[in-house]
Image (cartoon, rainbow, N blue to C red; front, side, top):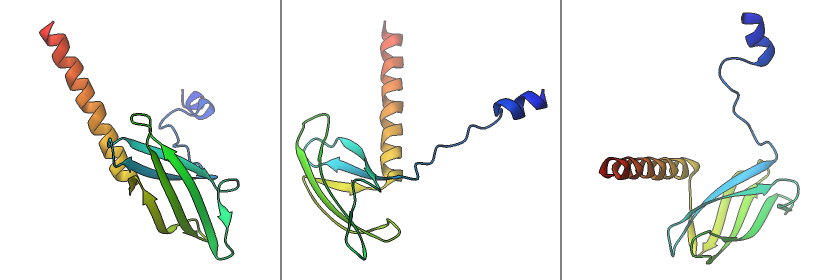
Length: 117
């Protein structure tokens, strides 16, 4: 049995690490929709000599308003400054917590509607 686990990778699944992408998390000022955006290090970033710059117009899936962003990154791809209109940046932790809260609320609503039926 131990042989099969080793062979087929039994146990905890490995978490995927995207080494080529940088993720940004934004909330729309108009409707509050959270958006996760991936920037490819090789194709989406402009080299400024001392770091990188990323320009992106983000459109959420609810109200379709444009969120204009400009992000400056250092040589290690860490955000040093940013400009945003039509939204605000949030952390990955805030994004994940809000998504989990939404998922939990949806499950509770489904459970309540099944009990009522």
